[in-house]
Amino acid sequence: MTEKGDPLENALAERVNGILKQEFLEEVFPDFETAQREVAIACSTYNHLRPHGSIDNLKPAKAHQLSGTIKKRWVNYWQKNKGKEAAVI
Image (cartoon, rainbow, N blue to C red; front, side):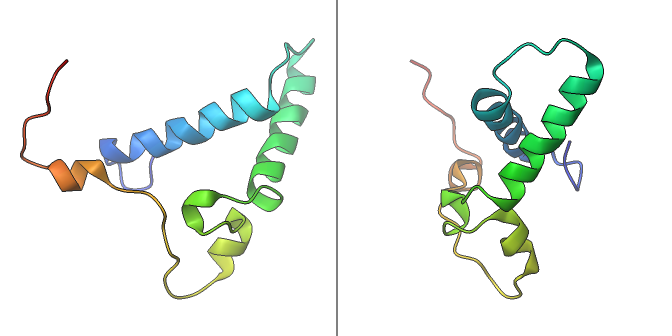
């Protein structure tokens, strides 16, 4: 589910799937065609209408059009703690 096959990126893909399911696809669809249409609408809404706090409140479609760097508002805890043992509670 990632661009580079890095399993650490899978969390981002799962986050997107969770948002689509929780915010846009909360119902049970009567047939496959209806589900397919609703998923397409949800993906379009997610990419073109919904601002994302993690990319400086830009919409993903707009962010992909920009050049240069975008201020990312998340912490990569994996890189921060790489090589350290995590506390298990």
